Length: 87
Image 1 (tube, rainbow, N blue to C red):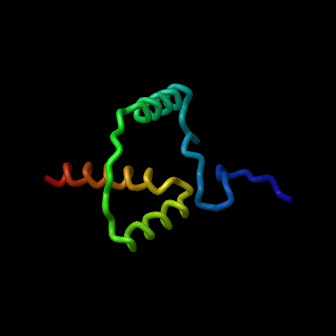
Image 2 (cartoon, one colour):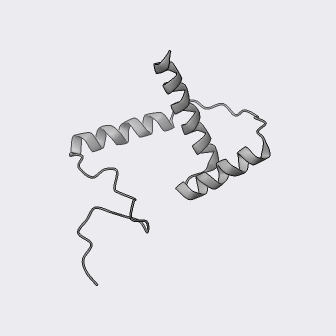
């Protein structure tokens, strides 16, 4: 078996270490920002979605290895950011 000299991790060849190339200060800043974001106040809501859309969302979340509600939050936030930049 040959040594793995590239910076991949996980079973898929396209998964790369997101912290590769960061110096210690950048890493600490990134971790602190993630912790701050995790502490944001959250409110539970009820949302009706078409069944097919929910199933597609769950399938995509499974493919990415994340909870589907997290994927919904990420997509919603990124979509709103993009809409804000477009206007």
